[in-house]
Structure formats: C-alpha cells, structure tokens
Amino acid sequence: MGKVFKIALMGVAVAFFAWGCSKEKPQTDPEPKADPVEAPADTTLNLDALVADTLSADSLARLEAERLEAERARLEEMINRIMLEDVYFDYDRSDLTENAKRLLAQVAEILVNENRFIVTVEGHTDARGTEDYNISLGARRSTVVREFLIAYGVDANRLLSVSYGKERPKVQGSDETAYSKNRRAHFRVSIDQ
Amino acid sequence: MNKIKLLFVFVAMALAVPAFAAIDTIAVDVGISVFNTMPIGVVPFEEEGKIKWANEAPHLILTRDANLSGRFEAVNSDKFDLVLFSKKRARQYVTGIATKLPNGKIKLDCYLYASETKDVLLGESYTVKPYDVRQAVHSFFDKVVYRLFGERGVASTKLAYVSKIDGVKQVVISDYDGFSRRQITRDSSINMMPVWQKGNKGLVYVNFRKQRPNLYAITFGGKETPLFTQFRQTFSPAVNPKTGELLFSVTDGGKTEIYRGDMKTGSAQKFLHLKSNQVSPSWSPFASEVLFTSDRGGSPQVYAVGKDGTDVRRITYMGHYNERASWSPEGDRIVYTSMDDGKMNIYTCALDGTDIIQLTSNAGNNEHPTWSPDGKLIAFASDRGGNYQIYIMRKDGSGVTRITNGVENTSPTWSWFFDEKKFK
Image: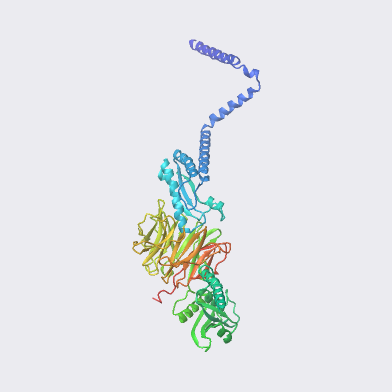
C-alpha cells in the first residue's frame, strides 16, 4: 500500500516538475515570440551542437588539422618573406650596406623567434670575373651575412653558408642593372622536422 | 744640300711614326703574328673506291691540324703542284691514298714528301672504321710534326670544357679541334672546372649536387668518386703533372685557402699559411713551383710560391684584377686573365711579371686560358660572337680559331699528351 503511494507521489512529483519546466519556458523565452525569425536559427544551432557531440573525435582532428594548416601557412608566409628578400652588395665587396643591415635585422627577428628554421645563406656574384675568384667572393658574402645573424642571436647551428659564385644569376644580362641584382646573398629556408 | 737633308729628316720622321705605331700594336692586336710558321703543301688523298667520309676528308683534317698547330701554314692544292709549292716555299707536302675495304673499314696510307725530290720522308698506314679516320689522321699529323721539328704535336690531344646542355652546365671532352664531343657528366645541378688527371685517365671537376661546390673525380669508362669530403666546399682543382696530387681551394668560414691532397687516400693538408684568400692554383711544368691568386693586396693578383708553400712572391702588379694564371709547359711564361672596365682579357708575362703582352682585345670577354701541352697554343673561352664559345690561338695571340658551337661552351682545359710513356 505504502509502496503504491510512494510511486504515485513520485509520479506527481515528476508531473509537477515537468509542468514546472514547461511553465518556465514561456517566461524565460519571450524574444522568439517577438522575433519569430530567430526560432529556426535556434533549432539549427542545437542540431549543430548535437552533430558536434556525436562526431567530436573527427571534429577535433579536423580542428587540429586546420590549426596545423594555419600554422603551416604562417610559417610558409614567413619563409617566403625571408626567401624573397635578398641582401645586395657593392661590386667586389662583401661588407654590409646600411640597407642590408636593416633587412638582416628583420630576418634575424624572425629567425630568433622561430627556432625550427634552418637557413642556408647562399652567396652570389655578378657575371664579371673568373669562376674561381667569384666562388671565394660569394663565400665571403654568405659568411658576412651568417655572422651578422649569429651576432643578432640566431643559433649558429641553424645557419649554413654556401657560395654559388657567378653560377646562379637571378637576372640575365650584362649591364649594371642585372649585375646589381645578382650581387647578393639569398636565403634558402627549410624546417627542422 | 741643306734642303735635301731637311727633306730626308722629314721623310724619315714621317716613316718612323707609323712604324712605331705598328710596333706598338703588335702586342695588343689580335691576328698579327710574330710566329714564323712553315708552309706545308696539302694534297687531297687518292681514293680507291667511292668513300663516304664520316665528317671530313683526310686532307681537310690535315689542313685544319696544320693551321691550328702554330707551326705550319697549309698550302692547299688539288694535286701535286711544284710551281705553287716552290712559290709558297712549301718544301714538304702531305697526301695519301685511301682505300675502301670490303669489311667497311678504310685503309689510309699517309705520306710526307719532300716537294722538290718527291722523296718519302714519312709513311704511315692505318686501317680504321670510317668514324676513326679523324683520329688516324691526327695521329699521322703528330708524326709529321715529330719528323720535321723533333717535337711532339698536339693533334691527338683533347680538351675538357663545360657545355650548357638543356640549360645545365655539363662537363664534356672533345678532340683539341672541337670534333668528337663526348658528354662526361649527366647531372642536373652544375658541373664546372674540369681538369685532367695525370695520364689523362679521367677528370676532376666541381659539382653542386649537394647544393655546394664539391670536387669529384671520374675515370673514363669508370665511376665517379667524391673527393675530400672532410671539407664542405672545395673547388679550383689543379693536378700535379709529376705526381698527380691535387691542389685545390677550400672555403671555410668565409676564408678560401689552398690545400694539397692525395686523391687516392683522401688526406689533405693546408698548402699555404696566409691570412688572405687564395684560389686558382697552377703547377709549374716540373711541379717545382705553384702559381695562385690572392687578394692579400686588396685585389686579386697572381703570386708564385715554392712547392713546399714557402717563398711567396708577387707576379702581377698592373691593373686591379689578375686571375687564373697558368704556367706555360715550356716554362718561360705565364698566361692569365685580367679584368679592366668589366671586360676580361688574356695576357702573358715573363715569370717575374715583366714583358706583359695582351693577347686579346676589343672582342668581348676572353677568359680561362689553357696551354696546349707543347706550349705553342692557348685555348680560351670568349663571348666575342655573342655567346661563349671555345677558341684556340697561338701563344702570341694570332690565328684565333673558334672550335665549338652551340648554346654555350666555357672553361676549357687542355689534356696532357696521350703518349707520355713513349717519350719519357
């Protein structure tokens, strides 16, 4: 007898609770009525949340992939920025011009903060002169740049230098315009895995 | 009387001025010879059976050999012509008989005659495949040189150089006259600075496949080996003509220095202990001294040093850029490239740097001179025709002849004699 009463009481309680809930809803949600357009949006949002709940593992992976992709794009953008900027030199010189120092400071800033990059500094010369002497000149240029970056705080182990002499001109031609573009140090960037 | 005297002086002066001007240009102008070349008659071979020559008929090969040699001047005639040969002072002539054999080979009987008496001074017979006719005729020509001069000719020698093939610099070899070209490297990076190993067994050259300059050795018909891998960047190889050991430049920490190394063991030691950068070593003919370029004076200049690396002395003083010196096989002069106003030209000078002679001028850039092993000729690269090609000239700058064509050919290095043993 007492058991039946208990169940009945619970039933009433549940009914009451349910009524209470349903009664509360119109009270706390007056806006949908004022703006009926919002209502369908609300339901789709719930649907999305439901989908997100059920596929949470996949979604996380996708988000992670997106994050990596964004990171990769960011790095790529940085790499491109470094690789686009060449350091130019005067004829038969391997000392840094003021412009070159300003540019190198920017590159150094990136490299100090991003310690995954391994950078090869390529030294190049213009077409004038012998192959042999130009390799030694290109070597001096690449070394001057490398040493500047090290002095700025970039890890020496992440900086290699190499000379191409006059073998890889950026611009073809035998006038000062072409020569001045070819007397350069170029950065080749790879990412340490 | 006085009037006549005055007139005489005037005429003498008038004559003297252009004479001086002419002398002045001998050292500078290309094509004015101070060589005494010997006329030699060249007559087409008699042909038994219709012969289709692989590239050129033998008398044309002989004509080219004679004119390139720096020793002769060919006097061509369709048949033996004593009047012409006498007039041109061709006291000897070369000709022969070519016979087509049933097996497809060609028999060449080559003769050197005395023009006046028709005495045979030299007779050689070769039986070769059509494609090897060139080689046989070169070989005969070298025997002619030996018969008449008592010296070895260079018609059988070869050149190694860099040829741009499909946009990539590749090392190739060819006969000294540019024929029979053969590609040696087949790599997609950069190949450059070829030099001949002792005994012409193969080449040493620079390759960039590791994205830096490194020396490699290749044996003809054999394999390629990386050299001196203990160094990151190596270039400027020079082979010791007596021992085969190598001098080369090593770049480390921005400084470029010359090392001396053994190709077989791979061991290498620093050759020079100088503060300056050093490139382009070159051995003297008997390997007792070495030429190299240093920027110790602020600009690249040529220096000489003993084979033990001591007793450095400066050779070049004129101009601000003197590089890639090479010692004449005759031992008496050096040839080098000098840059003035952005243009490169080839000069020779005595061993103490005096008696400078400009061999090329007003004809584009001229660089990378290399001596023929007999010291009579210099091969070099020039862009005088628009793009870089290989040329041969006599050691006085005369007789400039282009021997390559194609996209771009640079950095020639002449082989050693191929018959070193026979003449030892």
